[in-house]
Length: 174
Length: 178
Ligand code: SF4
Ligand code: SF4
Ligand code: SF4
Image (tube, rainbow over all chains, first blue to last red):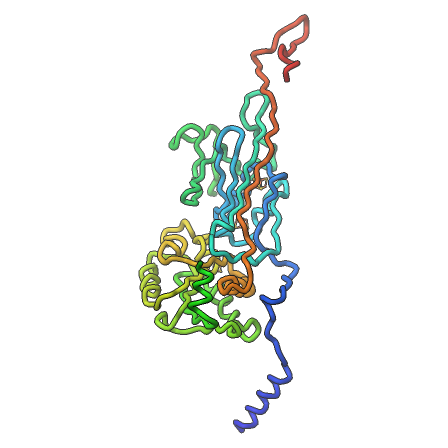
């Protein structure tokens, strides 16, 4: 009985042949719906920070260096490749690539940093508030996220750390 | 340097110890998938062992948590040197989507030194094999940091103070310089 079952096992194995993928030697195509890491296109981004406000891993940090320059720092290290940033981007500046070969020995290799030029309003000299689609992204005024500690700073402040921005969006919990 | 050390010290056989310090089990399943005949990392001499004392490499999944950080550290110290640590998954690389919740200390590199990072939630089995191949020097890493700067577009500022009434019109005095 047991010999028969062994013979049967051997026949099954021989019939299956070699199943192991020759992966690192030959490339392996990804399935069509596969999402790899997001790629940011600096020429399209308008710096609305919608991606940063909607990232579940809070891994896109926004720092306003001055009135005209906003830095968008994608860390890459805790990205879950969920694609929400690409969904929410009004300018389609983020594409989810099929790139999964992202192993590295320096975690900073995964980062992407965009230095964005923000147009200012001709009348008041401040960044203009873009129209409705961006309002839905809960635009929060000036942002000073903590790049050194890779943390999001929840309450945006225009003048001081404890002073809320005028007309800061209230996120309703109900 | 690590690559040279890796090739010299570890030869063709790495014994791995699989440590989950609080992940959701997604990455564990992918790591076990890598050991199946379909992906078969045993052709690189990689073998899963049950004790950190037998292991050369620790595969970390999940973030460092308050409750497991000490145990993770003890497991790391129990491994004989030279040793490598792979952070597998977004949780181990950077804390994942849990990075700011109360029991999570952050990435495992806060507790043990990490040599290789394999991001993904969970990473594909191929991505894990790729990370192992990078560590063994079979392939080169493909990611580089990206830094892009937009060109500034200078727009002169318009001052409402410079509006003047002239006859029946209101004109802007410095219109030529705009
Ligand atoms: S893919 Fe998801 S986790 Fe990654 S940056 Fe975009 S929104 Fe954040
Ligand atoms: S959502 Fe798109 S346009 Fe807005 S900041 Fe992010 S990448 Fe730029
Ligand atoms: S990286 Fe994603 S799949 Fe892996 S343990 Fe964390 S949450 Fe789970």
